[in-house]
Length: 108
Image 1 (tube, helix red, strand yellow):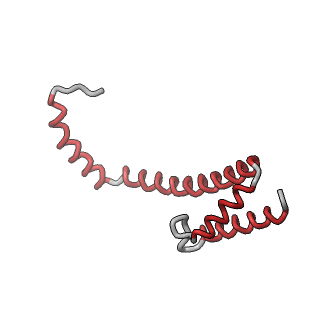
Image 2: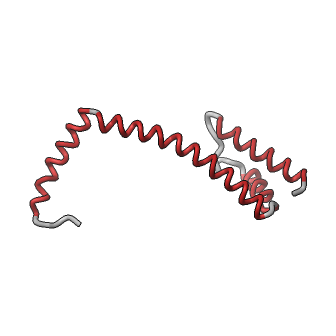
């Protein structure tokens, strides 16, 4: 890969990474069309091996971000499940639906 192309891709990559850490990150929906076009153009110029490597890096970064959010979600869900008020509400909902289980239909 040409050093100038690699430098431009790295600059675009790190610029997009910085935008992810700002309070209002730039998304594909808000990025200017030239910025997206530049990224697509430079990506297309890469060899398939480098494209795959870059995609793996981006997927890893995305997975880490989503996993961090999922950990928070799991903790929030566990706290909600342990909440006595939530348990009472779920018991009420279950009692309302218990009547429908007497309809003779089998569960599958």
